[in-house]
Image 1 (cartoon, helix red, strand yellow):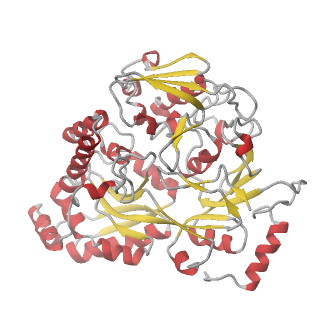
Image 2: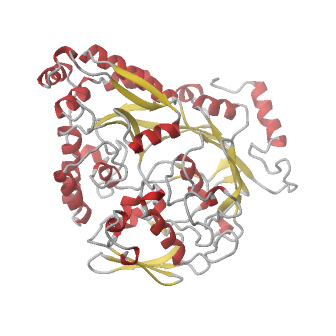
Amino acid sequence: MRKRMTAAAAALMLSCTLFLSGCVTASPAGSGNEDEKEITVAISSDTGSMDPAGSIALTYLAYSVSALDELLTYDENGEIEYRAAESYEVNEENTEWTFHLRQDALWSDGSPVTSADFLNTITRALDPASGSGYANYLFPIENAEEIYNGEAEMDSLGVEAPDDYTLIFRLEEPCVYFLDLLRLPVYTPSSTENADSVDSGWDRNPETSLANGPYYLKEYVADQYFVLEKNENYWNKDAVNLDRITYRFFDDTQSMANAYEAGEVDVATSLSSTVMEAYEGEDDLFVTDQIATRYIYMNLNVEPLNDVRVREAINLAINREELCQIVGSDTEPTYNLVAKYMKDKNTGEYFVDGAPQPFEENVERARELLAEAGYPDGEGFPELTYNYPTLEMDSNTAQVIQEQLRENLNITINLEAQELQANYSTRYSGDFDLCRMNWTADFADPYTYLSMLMSNSTYNCSGIHDETYDAIVARSSSESDPAKRAELMHQAEQLAVGEQFYIIPLYAMKSVNLVNPAISGIRQIPASGALEYRYADIG
């Protein structure tokens, strides 16, 4: 990777502007229209379903930010931005929320977007067969959890669609972050005419995959790319500038960076730290804080990880400063589950800074704990396997952890690299000893992290069942006093991460991106830090 483009690379960029559809251009090859604008974005390999009620992953997240309108969201200033809804009201108890949908909102085929379409996603997600990892975020709704568990019928669900443009949610109890939840997949609409099952393939078929946002699915080629076309039926189409966005899949970040330098793509996201050095001082470099935590799940159903002393020993024996020095300058040690860069909306400060660090590394104490658990100097400790994706950052991380635990605790950790989708499947099935986890915030509230360790969470893959923890997190959900609520959430995190050591937090990350300077109007999603292109432009 070169710090500055060579003359040949610059010439290649210029030529691709004229001839390659994968570059920023006002006259892409084959378009037949000199006024059209399009960009190409490099993203990681094809993963997960594109059905909001299904098992979604990176592909859906890239698609949805440009193709789907949620009821409402928050802008970068923390103000409500209405999308599919034009207004809402809530009762005094904060248990009944009524949303009024836009009557000018249309699907990409010109049919109206109705309350039934929102209900369609919700009811399908509450069927465990759909595999939604977000179903538990519907549980604040009356009877939703009972329906998911097969203990109640769907007609008892606390969601009502009295007419095509009214949607009413009745909650079990007050939920102070309910509006934040609305940006999650399970609260977005899916067409009742086409979205019938997560297995039918409607989500990747351009004829049936309708969108209610600025763009719709024009073409999908598995493992290669998908194309989004401007939705001329979008209610706010006059604010949409690009005619087309193409997302190309890449297996590794180096290939993405190479494609950017060759002019084959206009945006490359989540690149390695070497790109920061190579493009230092260049207009192309766009570095942001990721609202994300890289950590490891320990399977409590596997001995000896069911012993808190062993879990604590492993945590205390890892040198995170050394780990980050080796993995890359885009990482920073963390000792929390909640993302290091997540802001407390009430104080404006980083949430994790509002409480003491959950634990401190201490190799000597780690050895003592392992001996107390019956494994002095690692003697008799079984070999465990660490499953992780075949990404460069994760491979480097795995090797450092393996060596540190061998040196500090004299225990052997076997490494098993997997394709990203296989790694997801391994984690969901609970078929692991140690498994890599990365969580980027779905909404701007610490609950997005803390909820994942609750007993009823669909993302709790490691057998955690802690009634005390569950009760504290549940209390925080209905606590309306911001200071008291923050105190409860800090208490919950201390219990899970600093006392029971249910996870192994590793590091926070910067997002290293390359963006063609000719592109303007790219925004960051406040909740996650991800880039959004729905109102991007060229020039």
